[in-house]
Image 1 (cartoon, each protein chain N blue to C red):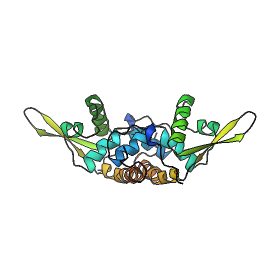
Image 2: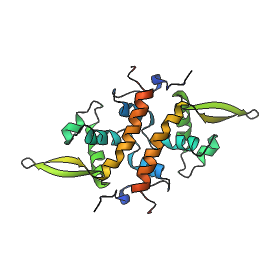
Image 3: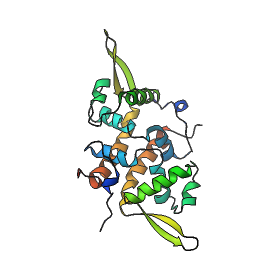
Image 4: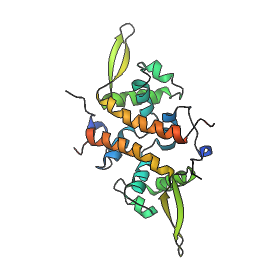
Length: 115
Length: 115
């Protein structure tokens, strides 16, 4: 059974698939968390919080919840006392790789490390 | 002379090219305007405002200004009295097509028109 995004948690603005994808991930943080999970193998809240973009922890909590609800990350306990969770990209999440790659290519080509 | 995004108008959070792209276009509207300009050949403020996602006009004004400032759209007068402008995608904008395509493929595959 493949995890599909839980569409009840997203308000779609239109039937356009570009628009629907942006309803899910059109913000400054969601795709950075997925970059960290998919490309840098970050797993824990502390891992994600330590990324160089320094996501505020309240936003990180919100985004992780949303990513679990939409089936892009799976939350698993990895430590008992105290209880701690890690976040694992699902099979569905792999389909975000082309989005990340396209953003990377554009950024590398046009938004170089000039400043 | 190729138009490059005016990096002075964007605050980059890190050197990561994915992050830099998201600094520029990581929101719910910027890429929809570029979809309209690149794919649906929309040109005028009224054209963009009429898209089925119904962007609020204050956000549309802001985003068009930003897209002109960053070199993704060029603003040209097309009517004299009253003075009216149209917005034309630049050569740089064409490099957003793979981003739009990747979002479209993900949306079509996983965020179908179920509701």
